[in-house]
Image (cartoon, rainbow, N blue to C red; front, side, top):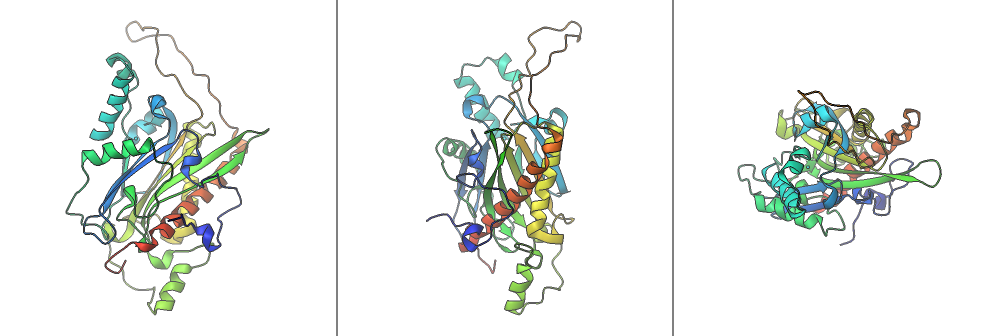
Length: 349
């Protein structure tokens, strides 16, 4: 079935053009693999999505990264390394895959220890469309997702991969993606891609193009939107947002870029985003620089010569276009997750 996006319904978020696929796969070198367990309507319906920011033969090269948490009732493992070192890679199964890649490439244990990084794993809780008492994901599911990443040419949105079992504004949501293209001086272009796992929000807060669509839907159904709600994590949900760009940015800039993804989130979720029980966590990566962190000159008693990396960085006074791209691409990815999830659901969701 051909992919349907929010653009097919007449709404194109923002001003900037999309990439050819309107997907995070428009960012050069990025690979995504998905595995889904169960089907729509099954008691068990969840999955896993693996995101590789670089090609497998370069997976040991760190990417500069930055994070922003709008509200922290969620989890992204490896976040302390990102905050401390400013970069990360994407636990037991992922680390095993990384080690296998290194062994297959003939890397020594010493080299592997220098290239070590903590796997980055995000989660959203699939309360309504999946049996949370039955954890169906196994190590084999993760291994298969890595294998799929080598050949998968399109991202399956909605109730697929890690997005399976997720709801967005009380409609089936889950996986969504989009991209934007920005111009540098000359003929150089940079791509900004986002993939989201949407699992948050109430219908009455949902808006599309500043139109309070959620309230209009409830009005049409004769359902009052001002009513008591069930409190707790299951009610508020969460969202994880991953942004990858080819633009050369350093961690302090990527933190700022991640913050502006929250602007796009608010374009859909309005004043309801970032509530107490919600986990709204954003990770932004840049693949442009390829820093060499290994120091070959030995130190004496812990004292050694300082070595530097030759890196590029965009000028802060030109960063506003990147901010706009981050907001636009996040808004569209969330809406796309709902459009793709339209045929899923059960139990009134």
